[in-house]
Length: 448
Image (cartoon, rainbow, N blue to C red; front, side):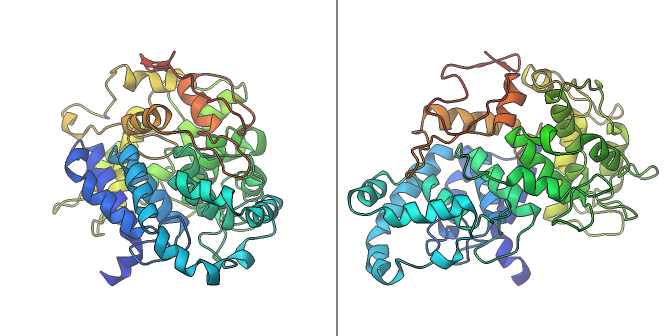
């Protein structure tokens, strides 16, 4: 299992999210152990972000996985306070090395305008300002600082300091910051332009400009822009929709990830989630959308349930392959989208109404009621009730994130807010007022 040593945060997420979709995960029973492991995987050398496991370099992929796992465990408040105390305890150890490492990482910050300004302002901080920051110890500030270090001048994000730039980094950075309500204008500067540059002639999105369109990267790019509420402004949605529709296999019923490739169950999520995201983007652009989306929920469920279940347990890529945690997680996530989101009305407000109002999802044939799974959120791929609980905790049980230099108050992505409230998009992140009303409640799936 040495090959999975750098994926330990992912292993936690794949397991707990898959179990949670099947209503087989008890957060109260496992929260303490999971949060303890995530504290050990925090990269103290980098000052923030999670590595693949304890003692490893901070990396955007496990940082997203760790944040999602905190949401699944319903442990946002506990993580905040225990992480704060852990950082406070480590302060004396860090101070002893500060003199020799004060300039460390300076050359690693890229030359985007946001990073230049960030570096200059950070270097100006001293004395009372630094002491105040240490006393406040909002763990999100350390994550934010690290995100700014891996931000690229082209608008994307490096997967780690001095690492590669691709669409995974963009999604992981935007989704993590949005989940923790710490998006700012400087953090997302250039992101829409970078994603748009990766849209190919086929209509899908590539990992980098000039490469082939790919299902996983297309989800990452579209979801990042939908979180920001910018997909309808920067992407050719019609071309993207045509490319996505063509990826569902006519015989198998599942999805391929690229043109002329084989079906793969992990794309059950990466591809099927594109359709509700596209529907929301079309809605924001003022286009009419169908009640049932452009993919066949029936045939996707049939492929997952009839072809991908391993007799020994778990789900697999395709018949003849062995089951693994990755494919189990994303096949179940795709099953959730197929049962809940592909067959529901898709306007921004009504799209979230059915499940929160208690409406039953649709399975492709009778006699398979035991195959129903919980609804996952299309932006973060965490169970929708876990996202709602975390959102309430962030708004009502924790202090708001205020970036230490600019005094800008961070927020969840405006596209996510619009999707769940039906409210118009809010243009700027840097504001002193929360986007969600302080006293909003769910009522039949809408926030009033």
